[in-house]
Length: 129
Image (cartoon, rainbow, N blue to C red):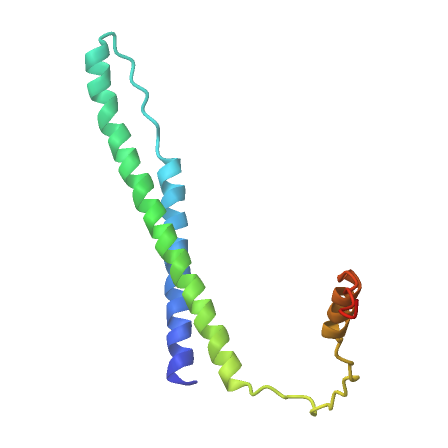
């Protein structure tokens, strides 16, 4: 196994590990007990609700960034791996085939234009009068 193949496997496994870690964290985050607060005072309820809401937003952003980085690393690892495989495996080219193309006659457009111009010209007056 060469250095390029080893680095491709390393990047691929790091990306997959980050994705697995992200999904485990997301699952644990969803399993937490939700606390619904009931307060008679709107200002007090807003203050008590705002803190868990901000905490949840931070966790969701964290999970999003971790999933994004994990997926990018996984894609890069797969691309590296396929490039290493293409370089290691030489392409077998089929025998060269001679292609004979039929000759095409060039169209003579100039002659058609001259004939049309002659037909469009009015007859010349004779100068012997």
